[in-house]
Length: 337
Length: 255
Image (cartoon, rainbow over all chains, first blue to last red; front, top):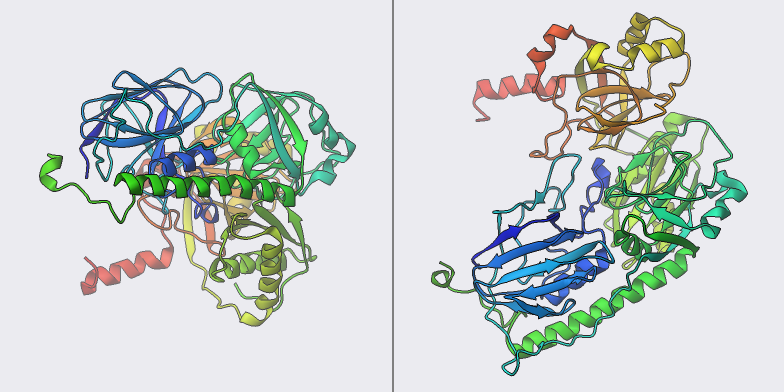
């Protein structure tokens, strides 16, 4: 058990995980980290299981203070990370000493960052997940003055000479910018759009500021449904591309309601959803058609990179005597107080 | 729910992590039994990589983890499940019944008059048709496990609102197309709200979070506006369970 971690500036941050996979059966969206790759990477870099709770920080600055030594990792959108005033690397494990502040500032390209703490954060669960669900009113939205609790403390690990960064694990970082290319496969109702469905691949779309974790609204040339009539509610996949109105395209993300009555033109791939998770209002989106087989292959390649990372982390942490479970020892209770 | 043989189906790709299975027989009841039977079978078959199934009226969305299982393998599971349905002799679960008090119209049902006008019938007739029917919960939908039901015997389908509301209160009783629903939680919505129940439907401290399941039966009952407060905050519970509770308390079997 480690001492509390005090939230000094919450910005727009929540405690989440990879999502409520049991939810859809009960009418609840899966939710969870919007950028799943970055969230997994953060937990792996912190020596945690992938699905453990971590902090998702959206757009705004964030600051917290450790009261015991901890080990963290920050991934996702590019930002300025400082620990105790020292600049630190994203996408690497970072040691934080008791009393030091962790500051995250200046998220400018990309939207969401992930902060994992070794030992993971304690959080309440609903159907097996701590992911916030704004509709049913569940979840931990961080506020100034709240304290988080990690399950373990980690002695400081620091390069003794010049305080150089200790880790160079070399994970491929997703590229982020204001022009996004998003892979989609044909949706189950593509035929209902006739030839106008092709517009999706020839037009450029602008991300509206009414976008959120439930769905992104995109302005641009809209495919039009050729059939009409009310459709019975059906289960819709995360990533569904719909045209509910004349104004905007709607791309459903992980907070989507599980059923809807609009035809599904296309479905964003798993890797494409991570790209969209980092889209900021005003960013430009182009869609590229792919197949389920290719999308699955791309998704598996990206996961294989994370598996390689996990092996490196386990090796390095093992050599340093931190992190890996077999070598790990919880601090005696006295050390926590 | 019991089923002799699965209805014929079509399977559609729905991205790299889901398939949509649609039952296409002429009989909507058969289609519904098929997709719910399949969802239950998939839920219990223990296949690695299957995340869950979202059955509705005539379709079921089967979600899977493409790292662990391929879309082709999931298709094979679906085919097997559909075959098994005919043999399993599905255990019929006795439906439970729910009584739902509703205040119609006014601030509780802002679209009641609009619906009456569109249907070309009186407000009283809309209420009469809505309360006349016994509703089977067809599926749990968005938001928050809403009970999705076949709508009342209105002359025409009810069009959705042109401008969906940003916020519809919990307990809203709404209709759209040929469907009817209660909103368990506050959420945006494009359905026509004709009334509101004071009963509390969703409880996230309890599992399942909503008291009904597909196959259960709901009846709506009109109450007076001034009686809204009398029910407010009470949890919606099945009728027979309420009477069992009394028995348990009397015999001291339950604290």
